[in-house]
Structure formats: C-alpha cells, structure tokens
Image 1 (tube, rainbow, N blue to C red):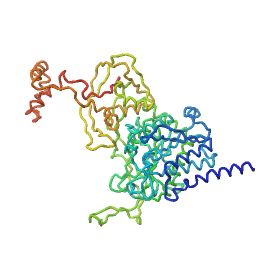
Image 2 (tube, helix red, strand yellow):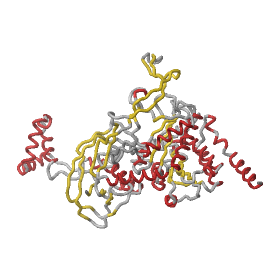
Image 3 (tube, one colour):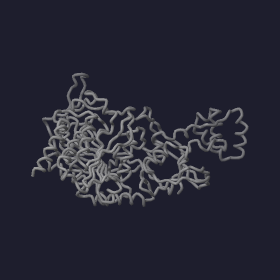
Image 4 (cartoon, rainbow, N blue to C red):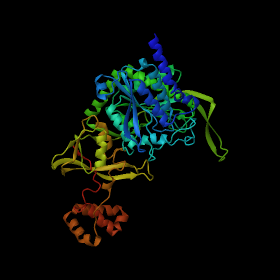
Length: 572
C-alpha cells in the first residue's frame, strides 16, 4: 500500500509541472512550440509506453518529432505489424493558426500517461505534436480574424510561406518530406489531420471530412468500410452530446442549399494518405465556437476514432487489403475525380437562418446568420464522384535518370524500382503534350497546368544505363498512376516538374528553310494537304509566311523529337 501511495505521489508531482500547459485551452490559450515539445519529452522520460522520435528537419532547420504510444512498449513498425496492431496517426498544426488538435493531443497524452492501463492494447498511436513548426514560431493574434480564440496562435505558411496542406504530392517543403518519411515508415491504417473550419455559421462545434468513398478503384454496390466507420463516429459523438456534421462546403451561398463532400486530391494530407489506402479523416472544429469547446470536441472525436480503430481493427485491415487488391488487379486507372451533381445522399442538418440586411459600410445587401432563428431539415449531400479521365495502366513506367527531382520523390515514397544495368532498346508508349492551360497566378510556388491533352506514340527507344524502370504492381501503385500520368490534375506534370520539355530548343531561319520546305512538300504530299486544309480555315496562317514554314517544320524530321514529349514512358 505504501509503495502504491509513493508511486501516486510521484505521478502527482510529475504532472503538476505540466498542469498549466494541460489547462491552457480552458484559458483561451495554446502553448508555444517549445513548451509542447518539453511536455512530450517529459512524458517519454517517465513512461516506457511513450517514445518521442526525431525526424527530418523542416524548412526552418528544426527537427520534426513523432510521439508514439505503444502499450506493449514496442516501437518498431515492422514488429508492430507482425503483432497485428492497428496504427492511428494524428497530425497537428499543419495550419498552426488552427491549434485545436495540438491542445487536444496534449490532453489525450496526459490522460494516457496518468493512467497507462487505458492505453489501447491493439492500437499504436502516432502523434505529430506540431507539423508546421515554422509557422507555429510566427505567433500572432490577428491573422485568423474569423476565429474565436485562442488569444495567440501560429501562422498558416511555413518558413517558405508554403501552405503545407497543399504540398503532399509535390513535396516542396522539407516539413512535408519529413512527415512523408514517418507516414511511409509507419503506414497508418487511420490518418487524422486536425483543423479549424472557415465558412458558414451553424450550431455544430465539430465537422468531419471522411474518406472519399465515391472515388473507388472498382465501382461496387457494397458500402465501403470507411462509410460504416464514419457512421459510428457520428453516432458515438451524438451519444457524447457533441453532435457533428460533414464539413460545411455549401453548393450555394448557405448550407440549406446542400453540401459538397470535400474532394481530397493528393495535394492534401488525407488525399495523399488515400494513395496508400489509409483511411484519412480531417477534423474541422467550427471557427466561431469558443476555444475550450472546440478543443473539447477535438479531444472527444480523436478518442472516438482511436477506440473505433481498436474495436474494428480486423475490418480496417480487411478494407485496406481489398482496396489495394482492387486497385492492383484493375487494368484501368482513374484520374481527376469531380463531383457528380446528378447524384446525392440526404442528411439531416441543423442551421441558423441566413438573412440579409443593408451593410453600414457599403450600403449594399449583405449576408448574416441569425443565431436566434434555427432550422432543421433534410438537405442534399453531394458525395458521389466521377473520374473525368481513365487510362490503361502500364506494366512499367520508365523514367530517365536525368529527372532526378522526380526520382527522389519516388524514392521518398518507397517506390520499388529496377535500375537498368546497360543501355537497352525498349518498346514503349510515349505521351506528347498537345494542349494545356496554365494558371495566370502562382499557387503554392507553381503555375499549375490543367485541362491537359496528350497524344500517344509507340516505338522502340534507347534507354541508358542508370535509367529507371518502375513496376506498377506494388504498394505504391495508385501513387504512381496519379503522380506520373501526364493528364493527372495533381500529377508531376501539372505541378511543373517537366516544364523543360515544353520549350523547343532548335528552330530554323526562314530564308534557309524555304527550299527544304519545298522538298518536304514534294516528298510528303500528306503534309501539303494538311497545310492547305488548315490554311482554308485559319486566316492568320493563310496570311503569314513564317507560320506556314513553321507548320511544315513541325511535321518534318527536323523537328526535335523531345519537344513536348513527356519524359515518363510506358511499357504496356
């Protein structure tokens, strides 16, 4: 009895030091980054079920940390997999101005440390205390003007002013590379990113983005397991007195018009997680609710997800295996998912009445939500998607060794590869970029391409020793298709990794090419026919001598083969 009392007193003394940080959120405050890491470090020194793992450096030159909670005291992910334990990874502070998850996880970890018997036996919990450390160090109290607390918080951009939740497929930031290493090493079954919403006003404190089950490799009438998992989250949160709703992205001006399920493309953390068949969730507490209520709701929804993962781990494992098998076995790859607005589900939603009144600033009509008037009704929820592009998956992609930036990203994502040991002629398909649009303004450091159109050529090509063949049948199959296909809206071409091929390097002088062009038309009457046909419909071409010569040049043997040729090739 005395021994137990002594241990209890030691625990009380230990946690007295952390009591202040634990209760910050109740005071409308969130701790500074250094305090967060000191808290986690102190926990790991006192309890063998906790380990703080140092990862790679962020753009600010600060290491990213991962806290692992393992009741069995096993911290090797391979061994954990062999023990058939599920892995839940929680990412906090991707936008440090939205710190609810940072404080929520501090409280969850403290509770587990105070009572280790409550640590789930069959779930290993991985927590990124703060992902965007760089932004967390830029504390302010004004840049989240739509948000009700805390008093101070971090900034959305990292040290390079990148929004890290737009960076996962392109991985410009060192922060992202460090987290991807953790994600690939631990391969979470459930991945959760904690956020605070922007947008409409409504009664719910917590909203949720669930996996896009409408974006399935194999269309099926059966309900995908994440949908059942999500329903359990909704039910248990309701039983806790914290009813939640889907993330509020209205199809019209206000929620009563219906909601769109958030389209989680691979630039986002959860869209990236889906490429490896992890169930990705985003908790979005409501910006206008008081900070203590938001943190409490985040605590409860994270606890709910952890408990449900332990309870249903076999179903989670089975779903992941089926998703991977379905994707691998299907000869088709699906790209560029868009909402199908002809199909929708129906959900019960509670809202504030949206009204309009005259603005005292502009004298014009303005929207506001009247919290004294509420409504509850069934509204449409547009959670069906259609792939706007479909490709036949190759057996292999071939990437020349010169494209080292792309090859480095493939290596970061644990892509299996075969390096050619000698110069080799290979029969391949080549995509040529024939048209695309480019954003007029930069987006996260890039001028994104979209509406990409290609044409296909087949033939034998010489590949050099050191070039890389990548088998598509592997764990990273979906990642490969969505990053390497040229028409993918979130692929490497769209993000400007291959822009060098879009510039023609060799040309002609018209006075030199004139006689050569005559010979080409004589030897290739089909080119002359195309020229005449185009001139008949194109007045500018018809009246421009140089453009007519260029038309001939572009279809001649003198045109460089590499111009507009996408430098990722396919073995079918």
